[in-house]
Length: 240
Length: 196
Image (tube, rainbow over all chains, first blue to last red; front, side):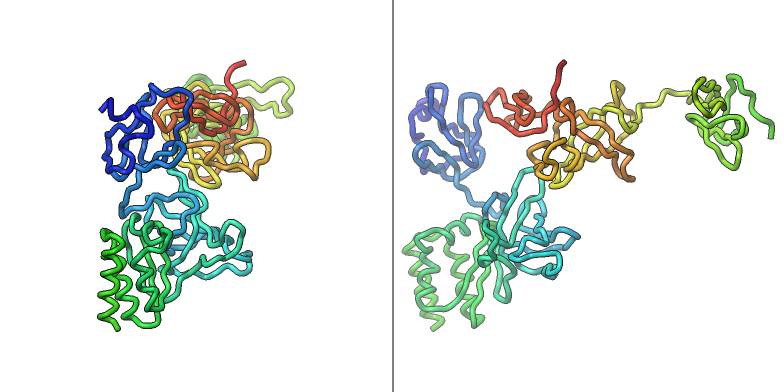
């Protein structure tokens, strides 16, 4: 493994890696800063992988491992779909599929004051933004964007929510638009909210639209762009 | 109900030690309806009052038979380990009071406003303590039923030992930062000033 890992950028970039793989040996490099993102760890002089996935590199010096899982690890500035579990004096308790329950302060809404606290019942689906996420504390959420405006955050009414993996959520949010959503968008009218925590909400006028879009999204995780378009067109023919 | 002798004598809880008009209740004794009773099993002893004190009654104390573990009192310096960090407070497990270790579990709480002396409303608990840190703190009060209230709002109070995410003991470099000797990463803590 030694000779594979001493060249920059690492020869394993864009390959599938598993925990234990050494991607770089930094003893040979001096005066260079390397930034390690998620899934990588420095063990004295070796950079080893701690999470199975695909190794990515971005110039000039950033490495990280992209992996997909059904569990969510809260991270700051992520937009997620949360479900209200309970409400306390200062916070709503929201489940975001992470290791700990997240807190949504009652004042974290646009124009929120002590007099107009929203009444969120247990079971309400919310589109929220993660404000604070540390490994040892409960994450903190907000229903406003960084400047304090509501910006689409808040409760989601009607529609249908299903769970998926974090990799599929990221694919649905990628730009240019994900092929399956683009194809359906040409013929059907619907709205979609994607949470990076592996939850997706679909709403449309007719239930059949909701069903066909949800099923297509779930099936398209392992399909390539062309396969996604073929799937979408086949389903559209059946619906219309 | 004979009055207990005031020499070194064995007393049990409930034994009458004297009259409240003549003696004061010290440690291990209490006053009730004008009489002083013992509250623990042990030997009673009399402490003469100091010459200047306005109350010239001698103090009656009962010395327990077995050595007590230390108990935190308001004003005592304690060493504690952080168990949980939340947005407004940190929970700690008190391990030593002064130089003696405790023999039973005591919980402490360090509130956001007691972490440091300046800018107390801008304190980020996560940048001051992490679970697993060892801190030196002073006991503010007996607190509520669950925990003592502690404070680290002095230079010599705060984190004295912590582990980095790489598993090494952090080295303090300032009153807000500690560095991991293995990876060079800097982590933020409320660091105690150790030394002269």
